[in-house]
Figure 1: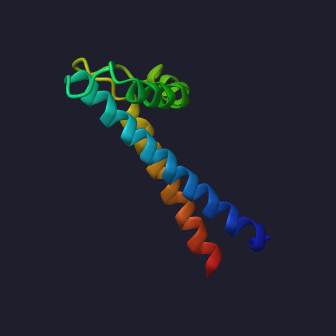
Figure 2: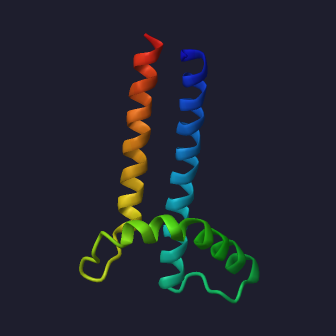
Figure 3: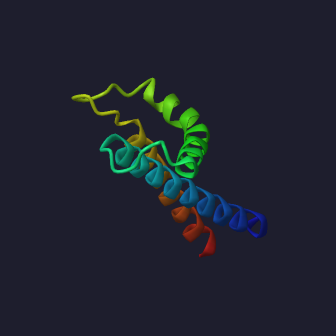
Length: 100
């Protein structure tokens, strides 16, 4: 059982870390667009941003239905980041318990 479970948990931990990086990068891009540092006139940046939005919007919008905006800030991306970190920590603890 451990022979299958440990690599699966390692893969899930890696994929969650990848999703975490993509969410943080998407939030940073969104801030750069809103502050006017980047603009949509660059076609490559626009295509990359739209790809990230299409990938992450279902997850962020699902959380956004339950989390209200606070003082005009959408905190759903922050909640997604915290959930991913929590799940990664739990999977790491499970891996430590299985390795003993």
